[in-house]
Length: 241
Image (tube, rainbow, N blue to C red; front, side):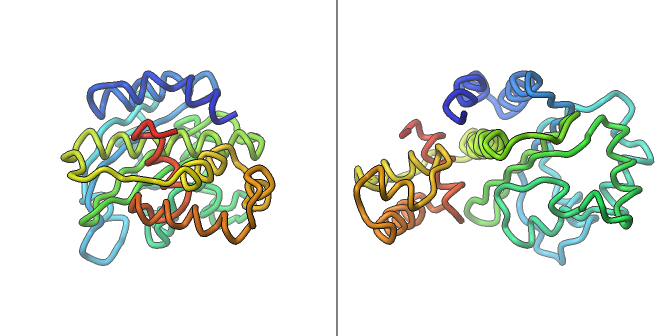
C-alpha cells in the first residue's frame, strides 16, 4: 500500500518549492477523499505552548480549504478556543488523527467537530517532523470520510511524513555530512516502511527480534529522527529506499 501511495504522490516530492509540494500533495490525496490541507514550517514557541503562542509562531505555507472558512467563527473556534491538538506537539507526535485528541464520542468536543464539519473535515490525518533548533514542519490533511483501514492510515501518515521532511529540506541548508547506514539498517527500515512488525522483520531477514530493534534504533539515531516513523520518512526523502 505504501509503495503504491508513494508513487501516487511522487510529484509532490519532486516539486521545487514548499508551496508547490503542498499543492501537489493535496491534488494527489483528493483521490482518497482529502478535503482540507494545511502545511506549516515554524519554530516551537519558547513561551508556554498555548493556542495563541502556537498561532503566533507563524510559518504557514499553504492552506487549502473551502472558501470563507478561514477567518470564520468556526475556524477561530478550533484554532483559538478549543485546540486539543496542542497535545500532539507537547508529546512530539509524528503521526496522529484529530480524533486521537478529540474523541468523537466525547460530548466535550461536540462543538469542535461541528466547527470542523463546516470545512468538510470528518477527521484529519496529521504528520509532523521535528528538526534541529526547534524547527517543526507539519501537515494537517482533512478528509470527507474517516473509515480508512489501518493499512491505509499507515500509508497516508507515512506519505505525509515524507512530505513534511521534504518541506524541511526545501527550506534548510543541505546536510554537511552523508548519513551512512549499513545494509541491515536500511533493510530493516525499508520493512518498517511497509508496516512490518519487528517479529515479521526478524523472520524475513532471519535475525533475532532484538537485533531488528538494534538496527532500527541505530538507523534512527544516525538519521536524527525522534522515532522510527520519522526515520523512514527521512530515508524516503533522501531517496535511500
